[in-house]
Image (cartoon, rainbow, N blue to C red; front, side):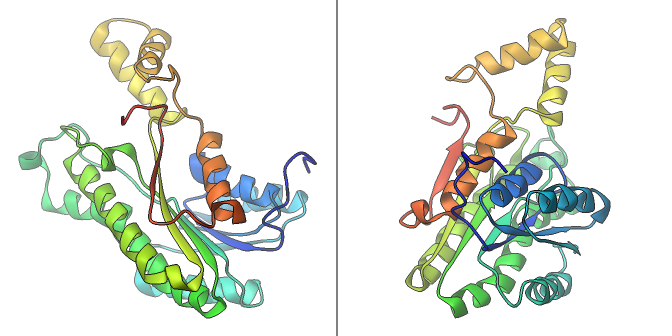
Amino acid sequence: MNELIPRELADQVAIVTGSSQGVGKAIALSLAARGAHLALVGRNTAPLRDLAGAIERGGSRTAVVRCDVTNGDDVRRMRAEVEAAFAGRIDILVNVVGGTRSLGAAIWEISEADFAEIVTLNLTTAFLTMAAILPKLIERRQGRIINIGGTFGLRGRAGRAAYSAAKWGLRGLTKSAALEVAAYNITVNCVCPGMVDGPQFDRAGEELAARAGISAAEAKDRIAQSYPTQRVSTAQDIADVVCFLASQRGRQITGQDLAVDGGWSL
């Protein structure tokens, strides 16, 4: 345990969807480092079990729950399993699950099936988990919900119509929920990452390198230089913001869209 990290979330129970890799994994580890116990939720439990082992070695308890968060019945079963694992306690929900399809396609080129899938992955999943978990938070008169959006939900972008529409919708869901539950000492916010260092950034660099006839390293540097801070975010940058919003330090912040993008969306 890092003694420099305050255990400000000691013994709270956090559900994190999409925590098997990348931003979701960083969020789970960071919540645990601050004392939270973790319910790790996803369809593929093998990487979640590896993550659970790392978290438990740090002193927090975990529950690995297999769940398809696009299915309401599965989500409600997940809630019951989490309650059983942690004596009925749930304090924090972080919705990380999302996905993209048809990137680069114009609106008239996107199939109805692909559009529906993108909306389901990025918006309906959050609705289902929030609808299942909020009554529990209301019952306890406290809680935090943090949805992971994206900067394409703050600025439109050609070739991103379905994804952008879904992330804009997530912002609307966040704001409406925030108003509905504020009186119960529950906050609901949306964290909007820009480009995050990792596989997506690697792919973007490779695509630019192919178009521009430069090396992948040069392409990634060019992308980073396009941000006002001249760097892309890391998964830990996102996790740090989530932990702040989950803590008492973020108690007066609700219904907000917080861009973590080095100024790209300004």
